[in-house]
Amino acid sequence: MKSAHSPKHWQQVLRGPYLAEQLQARLTQWAPTMFGFNLLTVDALSASFSLAGSRLLHSVHLSQTQPPCTAADIVGDATAMPFAPGSLDACLLAHVLDFSDHPHAILREVETVLRDDGWLIISGFNPYSSAGLASILPGISHKLPSLRHMVAPERLEDWLKLLGFEVLQRDYFGLTPVLEFPMLSKLRQQLVPHYCPSFAAVYVMLARKRRYPLTPIRQTKRKQHVLQPGMARQKQQVKISAEHQAKTQTIFATKSAESTEK
Image (cartoon, rainbow, N blue to C red; front, side):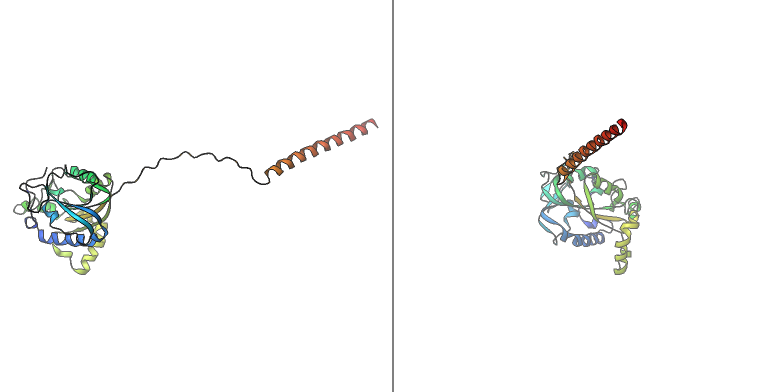
């Protein structure tokens, strides 16, 4: 189930047009690595983006709002998607978890409908940033999800790992274009994901569903000794040397007896 204040377009979100522009730039950068047949976009914010640079052939838009938006192909609940398991190749959740009462249930459902090695793109607001502070300020709080609905990026990564996803790419940016100058933007993209992601207002991640087959550990068999060249001769030599030693002892015993008789 979704919260009632889920936005239908980016103008209803604080700094929405700027955030949409930044997210589209990341999607354009990551799109060439994605391929398959079916792409699922959930809700209106996700449907506004384009993955034209990818090799995904078809796009399906799932709307959870009532009444649904005009571009919706299917109306339903993201916690119970009307798709067969493993039937989708990619899924885009642009701030879907931020406006949901059951974000983990949505992730479990996405994991079910995605095929092995399928792609998942998620963006969200960080509660430990300026977005979390703005969500409690009067006058602008209605343009952001409530603080209790925001999912921190570290928490989201833990959820994805538990569900078998591997996070391939991540990026973080703020609500204002303060660090979006050419040089500062490159520096931010290099440093923020590694050193201070917890303070970024918005995050976007590219993950991939992984399934590693469980290979049973086979019991190692003891190696059987195989006869090698020379082993038979070695035994024969040992036998001959033993006979020679016996004969030698007999000769010594005979000589000792003869010397005693004398």
